[in-house]
Length: 148
Length: 144
Image 1 (cartoon, rainbow over the protein chains, first blue to last red):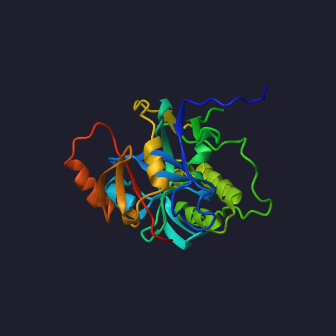
Image 2 (image 1 turned 90 degrees about the vertical axis):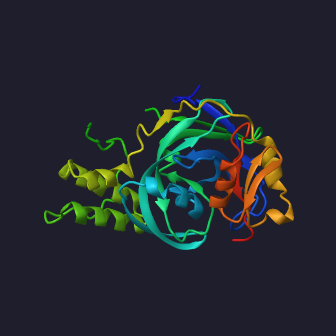
C-alpha cells in the first residue's frame, strides 16, 4: 500500500478542547499523557509540531532538577510567551498507553527558569524521535519507536 | 561505548554554511552550533555539529551537542504496560469549576483527589493518600 508502513506499539486517548489554553485559538490543542523520569505522577503535555524540544513547565522542573545531568548548551528563542533563554538537557519521558505498550523516549528538554507556559512536546528533540499519528475520530494518539 | 555516527542520509545544510576553522576547539565549535540554532539555521547547525563530532569524537560535550540532532534509537518500549482511559478526567478538564482556575489539581476519574496552588503541594497531599491508581496531575491556567 505504501512504500513505508508505520509501526506503532501504543495508543492513548488525547485530550482536546480543554479550558483556558495558551495564546490564541485556545481550544485547538492536543494534550497527551506522559511521565517524566522521577516526576512521580503523570502530567499532560501539549503536542506541538511547531515547537522545539520538551519544554517543561516551571514547577515540573522543580520536581526533577536534582536528576538533570550536564547541560548540552544554552538556547534563546522566541516563543508564544516571548523570548525564552534556557539550557538543553537530555532527559527521559514515558508516553503512557491505554492500549498496547508505553514508550520511553530520550528527549531534549529545554529548561527555562522563567518559563510561564505549560509543558510542550515539540517536534525537534521529541516528536522527531518517534513514529506518531493522531486519529481525531477517537481522539487517538498512536506512537512507536523510530525504525529506519 | 559506541561512537555516535552522523546520519549520512540527513538533508544537506546551507551551501554557504560557515565551516569549522582549524582554530576551533570543542568549546568554540559548540558555541557556533548553539548560535546557529538561535538563528534558526537548524541544518547548518546540524552539519557543524557533525563536523565537530568528526574532529573531536571523544569529547563529551561535542558528543552531547551532537545528541541534540541525533534522533535514532531514542525510543524503547517501556515495561509500564497499559493504563485505564482518562476519558472522565478529560471531561472534567474541559469544564472545570471556577475554583479550580489557577490551581494544580490531581484527578481520578471525575474526582478531585488533591488541589493546591503549587505542584509541590499537590504531590505532598498525594503522598498521604492510598489511591487505586495514578491520578492525573494538571494545572488549570487562569490566563496566559
